Amino acid sequence: MSESLHSDKLPRGEEPQIRVMAMPADTNASGDIFGGWLMSQVDIAGSIAAYRRARGRIVTIAVNEFRFINPVYVGDLVSLYSRVIHVGNTSIRVMIEGFAERSRGTDECDRVAEAEITYVAIDEQGKPRPVGDSA
Image (cartoon, rainbow, N blue to C red; front, side, top):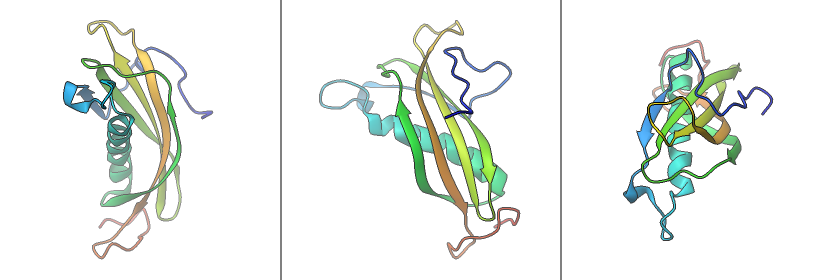
């Protein structure tokens, strides 16, 4: 992911698409935060950027890349940042980076994930539409 921030500090001057606290209900049978929970949060964050760019309904069509970098623990505040990195005729590719704040109140954190996801803009019938058209 050549466009990654590759930093363990929250991006300065950027607001996360979402922030969510990892809770005990988000754990797997071993008591660790379930990877699928983090993937879901990443997809939500990416879809917000894609929806805004498409100015309407979008669907996830591909997870081009997903990297789990560090574990997420119960009580971590996970901040997910996303940005559009490519726009095609009907598709939008989004880069998402996740950070876990383990000691809230500081900007020190651990990068926990990075992903690149492709979304497609769709119309009211669920058919692909040009990105510039509103649904």
